[in-house]
Length: 211
Image (tube, rainbow, N blue to C red; front, side, top):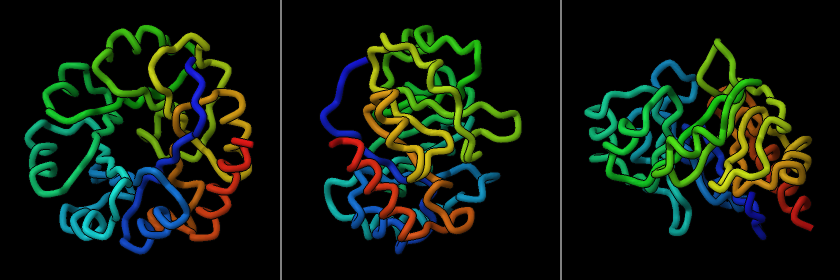
């Protein structure tokens, strides 16, 4: 796996303008908007428009979809400025490639997950996001998976997700050496509502891991 001088940070599940600005002010590289209705962090197009309008330059906006129809995705992308798409369901490579934007694919890790095979299948993806597998939900579970299951010889950039907090993110960065880390529940006071102090603590822990 390639070594990166700086671990980037995405704060996902943003539902309010003030939370987006707190993430940006703390130094986040990207924010994530969830367009998956069953999620407690779901945002409407109108909410997303307000959030994106407040984001300054050089911060990426990620749209997360789970098994959405191409028409649904295109409807959102026609109305909201999105930089990259995160496919977080059971999408195939051809599903992902139908959307003419850069994308990365979330893989929910189990003991028998073959990440090297996923890397071949999703050759067109910009990165692989590695999250915890549970039957209960497609993500945002707050559970950590066994980082030892990640092969060292993955060529694609890895975005580490799944149960990250200010307390464990430095260890994750040291062990996995990911391109980026992705946090949602670990910086919340309640589902969909971020906590400014937790965001600051998380960003501080990421900074400390670089030294």
